[in-house]
Image (tube, rainbow, N blue to C red; front, side, top):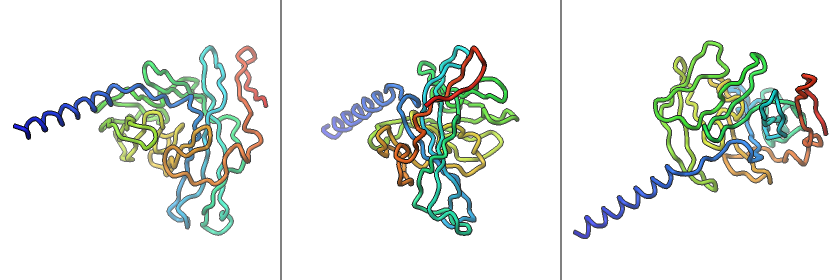
Length: 248
């Protein structure tokens, strides 16, 4: 009888824990002042990497009545990048800032993140954090309209952040082992993840606004604000004149 009571208590505890996890508040991707550190690799290189970027949240701007977050980029270089096939650590931020990287916005009610496609003058779904097992997500960067099938959505514990949803996907015509994480982004980089399905980009880590590593294994040894004098640049769109401009 005591054994049955113990089993019942454990089952009840697990059910309560699972219910609390499932009912957790939504963790937005944007607005955290994160810095996403991502690298591209090459099998022929000595250290397995060939280039890298720091992607970070810049200012907000209004584009024809819709408010977007401007994602900025900064180039990562390597100390030993002059030797043949050697792009090796230590890695550092060069200050070669991208004036504009992406216009993105997040709808926390629908739990979706949108990116603006300037080539086709339309908005596309970049992330959908409301999906569940068996759902589909169209690849916004694929002209053949291929789509991703959600194999599974599972909660996993991230040290220091708590439980987050992991969305495991595969494309209908390809196999790329892709997954993305609520409030974190994609394992293939935060802003253009589905563009790298058959490529080699990888999200290595995320730093917070104080440059503390909060996810992954950060490789750069120089913080963005210490080397980049242009990091206060703001990029805007002036709707009345239909021009882009920057200040700072």
